[in-house]
Amino acid sequence: MKVISSIIDIKKISSDLRNSGKSIGFIPTMGALHMGHTSLMEKAKKDNDAVILSIFVNPTQFTAGEDYHNYPKDIEKDKIIASKSEVDYLFLPSADEMYPEGYKTFVNVEDITEPLCGKFRLGHFKGVATVVLKLFNIVKPKRAYFGEKDYQQLLVIRRMARDLNLDIEIINMPTIREKTGLAMSSRNRYLNQNEMVSAAAIYKALKISQEMVKDSERISQKIINEIERVIKSEDGIKIEYISICDPDTLEDMKIINDRALIAIAVRIGNARLIDNCMVEVR
Ligand code: AMP
Image (cartoon, rainbow, N blue to C red):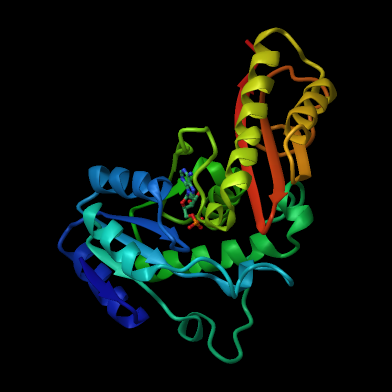
């Protein structure tokens, strides 16, 4: 695996790959890699001739008071993980090169960035869309891989790719979980042992909500109340939002009469954690 830190170098590498007819699979990440990330790398390896992984803790997607300066970093371990997953090129750009003095251009995907996390992290998705478009323009991959854990992010990237006519296939991959069901996340590193145990309630609540829908519950508020009850039965979890919404528009669904997304965001100790699942009425 080659480690590349300058934009001009990775552009040259990806251009040479494309010119020799090789397909590039790209995985943008913020590092502190875990099995959620490696599942994307393995899929990219299967689908493409070459895999490029980026690690960049993107300052523009953090809002004031968030964990930008403390975001978990473990670059030496990340190199080992990426190389074991047969990543060909690890791209580690610097914030100075990505956002030089006078940087003024941002990508704004409307509407779907407003509810859920958008309400609590103002400007977050503008930062995400901007950095992902920049990385796409630098790497010019054939395919790019994203996790369903960050469902709203996936939707924003898909919309941006469609609206801006990007010739990049966006591929989504299922959420990888700990044995307890807790969705893997770099931010799980903030949790102590007790908090890890409490955090399992998020998945437990999602499973219960899926069962309720299977048992013919259609009233979203009743399901939301039950999710709230399950999560609040654990110590130290603060609910940010629980939403049952249309998976395409993210608009609230009061009655579940089709496919619906159930999305949760909570705070536990120093961590903000999100998770979701899909339910379907046949
Ligand atoms: P991050 O480093 O957290 O920005 O995530 C980089 C990519 O990995 C994003 O597309 C995430 O959705 C994806 N990802 C993060 N956690 C998981 C997980 N537990 N399972 C699957 N994909 C994940």
